[in-house]
Image 1: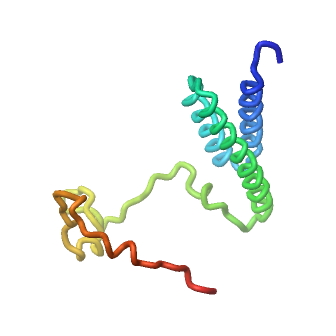
Image 2 (image 1 turned 90 degrees about the vertical axis):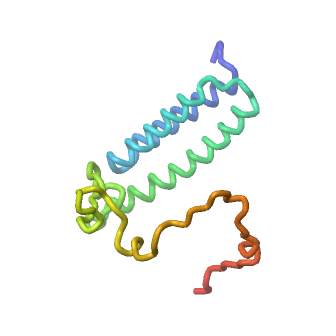
Image 3 (image 1 turned 45 degrees about the vertical axis):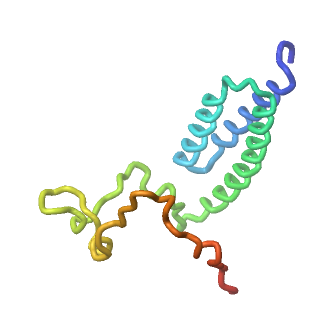
Length: 145
């Protein structure tokens, strides 16, 4: 490619590859999500000049190509089952609905009764003064199944 560096050609190739994978997603919602993320991420970094930073982003993009190909194949296989609903596509244009029990008498949104029962949130003037030494000895492990 005359006039382009190897790195520019590599970036452009990755961009095209990611767009192609995005367009091949099995649902309109997933396709739209992937395409907007790819375009947004590339546009946000178009002015980057540091070769090391560009190389790091290229490596991340190459990893994302692999991840998106696996995701595309998996979702395509799942979408062949007519009885299966892929959760991301259930409520395409829906807005979260709040229960009336979360509304105060004046119609504003309040906290759930369960949270209200816990009392007011803890107010800390100086978070750095909290003693969290117990956290370093806390060993959370997943149960053996």
